[in-house]
Amino acid sequence: MLLRRKDRCQTRITHTAVSSHLPPAPSRRIQRVTELLRREVSELLRRELNVEEVGLLSINEVKVAPDLKTATVFVGFVGNRQQRSAAPEKLAKRAKHIQMMLGSQLSMKWTPVLNFLLDESVEKGNRVIAILESLEKDKTPSA
Image 1: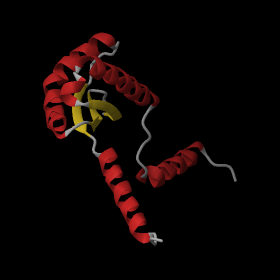
Image 2: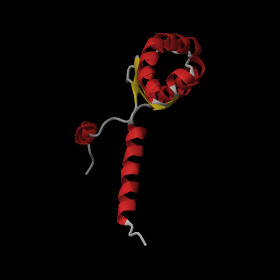
Image 3: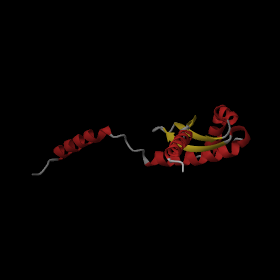
Image 4: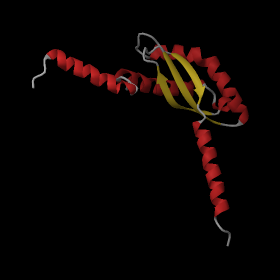
C-alpha cells in the first residue's frame, strides 16, 4: 500500500508526539559553548582568585540556557571552614569581573550571565564513603 505525502506527514507527527516525553538533547552548539565556558571559567578562577582565601575550586559542571544568555556554574570546593564560608561571597563579588574577562576572550554575540553555585556532591559522596567504611569496620570480626 502506497502512502500519500499527507499520510506520511501525519505518521511522522504522530511518532514525534509519542516520543516528546523525552527531554530534548542539547544541541551541538550548546554542548560546545558549555565546554568552552567550563574551560575558560576554570582558567579565570585559577588566575583571579587567591587559593589562601577561598581554597581550591574546581568547575564540576556548567549548564547553559538554550538561548545562551545565562549559565549556571557548579563549583566544587576543597578547603577549611573559613575558606568555605568565604568562597561563595568571593565568587559573588567577582562574578561580574569574571564575566567581563570572559566576554573579552570569547567571540560570542552575548556573554552569558554567570551564576555560581557551590556543588556539594563530592562532599556528600565522601560522607557516604566514610559511613560505608565505618559500617564495614563494624562488620568485620576482630580476631
